[in-house]
Length: 114
Length: 247
Image (cartoon, rainbow over all chains, first blue to last red; front, side, top):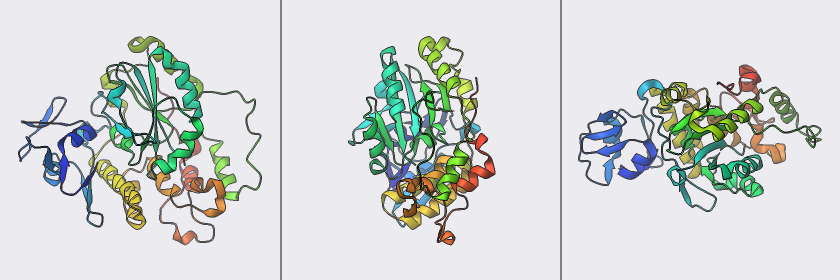
């Protein structure tokens, strides 16, 4: 996920990664990773978070952004069958979440105009 | 896109929502024409940074993910050919005066193998039978069948997102650097390669400029990537372009 500046919004991180920030650390399924900073604030230090969770981090100072890659727990692209709450805009900029459509079967089709 | 709208209109009354995700770092400007032409009745979303690659493991298009009513993936990333159609009304051949490279691309594409009948029979079976369908996988099968992940690939996803962000910020040279890293670290992703290649447009290709995906015929030395669509499809074999259906 792309981070502008040095901090990352807790909710944005949770939505983008499937990890949940709890008092005991960053948690997904049965796994909790302790974090070496206070987690009761909305903004989290991006670099410290990535380092504590052993997430890949690429900094791009020419644009003042950094990118945090996904975890590689279990060695598979999907580490839980619970679908992450994908959140993307439509042509009008209206955001849609996967969770908006729960209660129905959902088929996600990836396509590209090239 | 229009085929997905037709499918959605066919199955929506059965309690199914179809969501299309357009992968393009050009964002709405890249996806708009196709979406507007299809006038979709379903949510047609735009994925500027290819979030579905990082979150689900999408590596080619079209690919699908099936999710049940409770939000559990019951069949992860799968090659998803459009529904089978009869030959009646199909174009007789490529348009006239197509550049030679585009003729070669279409020639290789003709050898790409897919099995729409099997895919759509399985999809209809799941829509009808839900968890009792033999095509609804257990949680452990969903995880085990998902693509490989490693620290190197995860780093590649981060580079790719930075490349897309550089495209958004109109920083082409920076984008190329991160695309190159992503291609090296996630070598089996056709979407990561095609996204980068499609931005190196060649005016001679006219309306096919984003499908040229290779060196400029007059300046091949300026091509910034190791591979290109035609070279890579020939090296890997068009029969291997899509993962075959797995029951």
